[in-house]
Image 1 (cartoon, rainbow, N blue to C red):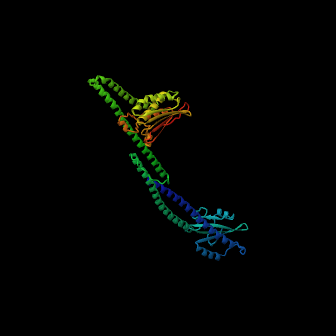
Image 2: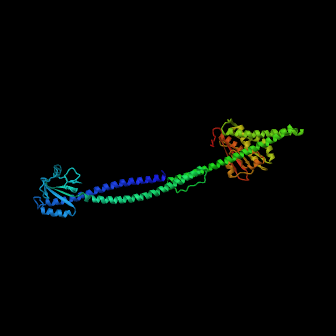
Image 3: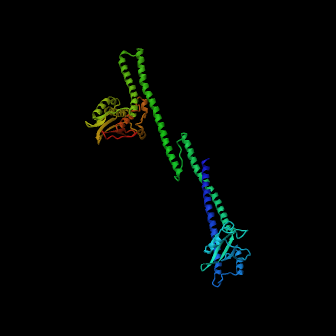
Length: 483
């Protein structure tokens, strides 16, 4: 069954249940009220007639038969009948040849001054019917004088007259309830349609997302829980879209890395293969052979370095390397680094500047620290020509900081966001001109710094260079940064 019909059925069941409960209660109340009013009216008549019988000028407490007959004529206008019994339980009005008397059990209660109410004399087992034709609602009122029973009056009205009011109330109630049912059904239809429509929109939007369409947005007014669900759905879709875009970007970078890696490997392999063919066919002059062998060595090392970088990154990322940390003077490491990088800086017409005191103590794995600094300086050299690269170091509270600042091409905000991710290249065009960027250097740097419990920050603007700041903490003061 569709949700729309389920909601309609649910609303209607609630309405019908409410109508039945309210209707039953109302009819029950109307019935009680009708009979209570009838009892009060009849008891009022009986008490008033009793006052006449007990008047001081009527010492025998008898009522004139002619008066009673006239009174009966008057009361018949209200469809009220009466019977009077003396203190011997004999009917004295209307006169009858039959020995008509009240049941002794009731008569004993009347002698004690109790007024008796009879809802329906055809159904009440305490009395015999006062009429064989019509059922009566009646009261039996005792007349007492000086604590003694003087007489008893039975005064009654046809049950159908009393129930006319109840029937009228029932008709009015049925009309009201049918109107409520129609109006309630209409409201139920509107509410069910409104709720079902919102859920259907949500269902259709979910199908689109399942089919890969993340440009779905549900309008909502924040009025109920379904609107809350729509708002959360929009948040989820936005998150999925961002995640999907990120996956596509990662895949694009992976494909670019594979292409770059293939390019990086193809160039030295082509060179080595060409030289080997030259040696095989004796096409290389004797004086050029030493230079050719040196070139093959260089290209081979280049291949080994590319493979090692990938293997090294996987080991670092999966925490498969062990850090042997100790305190040492970082200035000595940085001085040796500048000596190693001097030739490459000269090739790009860059100037390397070391700005640090004679001793900067750092707590780290010396080999991995060297690897971090080498990768950062190489990255600076890669994107800087005819410029300056400044390496600074200083102590901070419970640690040491290192800054590598260049005057190169710089980066925008988007590039800085992804600069430490694997395969990412801030300037992919450089791979095409043989700069040798593999997209792994900074990923390795970040992973190593995290394993040291340190952090790295980058600040850059396009055309104004880049500045990388590395913070390594002393033993016992590491900052554990989550991936």
